[in-house]
Length: 232
Image (cartoon, rainbow, N blue to C red):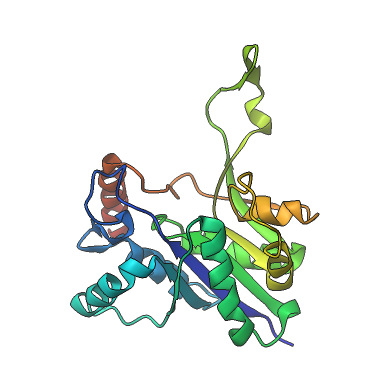
């Protein structure tokens, strides 16, 4: 049975830290919404995943308007999100029950909508590694010195042992589906933590320093410059 590939794009964020009246995934980046850049990256992947977009229910109508305005035609299915990221991903997984013909051969990447600078090579490596090892969680080694806060103050930690986690986080569908049967826990900070809680080891895949999560206004400036530079 050949592998099937999916991408769940989680787009439930707000514009609070961007000081924006609309969710940050809809802000313009070089003339079109951030979210469209992100979807395009997965669409261009060598693995051609089926794309599932998880949106807050209140944002679905706006997204339809934006796709018409920007003539955005990349195929994708829309799923309403939940109150927490955990539930949004779970809702996205539920639709795969109908799309995935074999759980054992399906590979699912989960990605933040506001990481539009992810490279296609990072996406491709994530699918390939997850196919071999069961999962692949992109991360970059810390470039900075790190200190850990505790009850007695803080202490230095070797940065060689510290990784900064990114997305995509990519998993065998059966593994991921089993993990999301867990009851929600506030310690679930990402998909890797959910899968790890089910007893699976996490395989770290090399990420990309430029694969930033757009959070603050200055991130837009950086992203626009980066995209223009790479268009040349």
